[in-house]
Image (cartoon, rainbow, N blue to C red):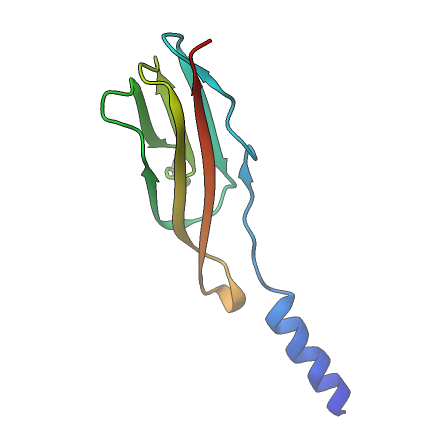
Length: 119
């Protein structure tokens, strides 16, 4: 009986953990003065809160927006524009979604490198 209880507890704790899918695994490189567009897609889940942090200069020529269709209107992050500044930059996405253990709130995060090349 004790073994059944341990198995039940183990399955409840680890069998219900949620890891969301965020694609792509990496961003394609950008090139100076050439139009760039790429998107980061978070699977169709109920995102409660999302923030992104970037170290792009304000004159980079790129704009990052959160888009999507209701009820998943925070599930796409779009990067677009004509890069004006060469360099290696980071984009970090952090947020919360409902659907973790026992339908609780679960945090997620993912980091991307955005490389802007001269040629």
